[in-house]
Picture 1 (cartoon, rainbow, N blue to C red):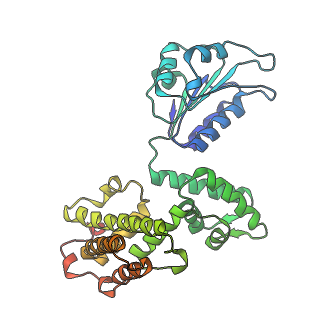
Picture 2: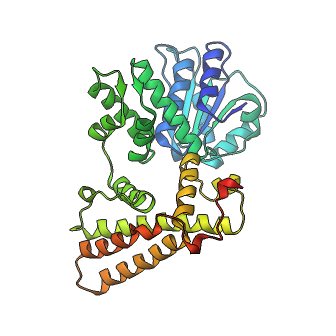
Picture 3: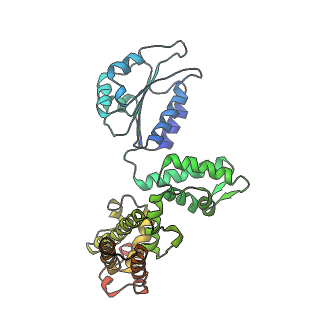
Amino acid sequence: MRYTNLKGFEKHLTASAPHQLCRVYLIQSADDFERKQALDAVLHYVLSPDGLATRFFGSDATVLNVMEALNSFSLFSPQSVVVVDDADKKLIEELDVHFKEPRSFGYLIIGSRHKVNVRFIEMHGVILGLTDEKPWEKEKRWTEQLHEKARAAGKRLAPDAALWMIERLERDAALLVSEMDKLLCYCAHKSTIDRTDVEQICSASRIHTLWQVADDLVWGKIFRADSLDMRDSSFFYGLLASLRQQLMIGLKMHDLTHRKISFSEWSSFFPKIWPKTLEKKAQIAQRYGVEYFRGGLDRLFDVELLAKNSAVPLDALFDFFRIWLISPRFSEPTPHSAPFMNPLNR
């Protein structure tokens, strides 16, 4: 049995406990925090109140010592429980071959970063596979989890606050849980948690700051001077890289439109952009025109060249680029963008 979402997996555990649980569980997730959460969820159901599990991690596990642990019974638990986290593909495949038919041994719970096709576990166990989850599917799942956590505390989480948390914390599941707990304490006397609360209490990393400044400037022509520190050259060059990435996205959108690629297929070209955000940016790209993105990349090249080969202050070079970018001549469609039809209207 295979599940590709946590809700279905959690329903299985609730419905099967305590007597109908499977003997083998395989959790496939590249995120260490989420994988541990799923492993702990299984342990919650298979372990007796005073029971103990034998744990292996990564290369410490072999078929021999896993099988020895499964066949070793404890005075404190009626069934042996073995957990193997960060298991490599070879070990999982060997274990899958070893179990040729269902047996009434103890519980084997495996966690892996990789997707592994295994016949025995697929037929007689349960697999939670999150490795194929699309970025926007993960964001949707995290958004639902944040709202559920707020509701459990008797509060309402504003939709834009949840999305802002995910962007601000760089899609880090562990940080989201931690920062949500902080928000619930901070808003103890409020019934609604909004975006302002997130900005006041939740941390923001350096990478997020660079990405957000570039995103605001390229797509919204919004500039927040207080978010920049041009005294730090690494910040300056990191910002140039983020700006280049955003401009390349716009240029790619015009290329797809020119090639008459249906908008329904665009998500495969931009797997890390949430569908609603992609639709919004496609409309902005059409309005600004192809020369906005092409010219922006040219000006960015000029700025980087001058930064490396002249004594012009970095903040002055950035102002040169910013003023060109926010020029009103790119506020409406230009003659250069006329051949590019809006992909959302096709």
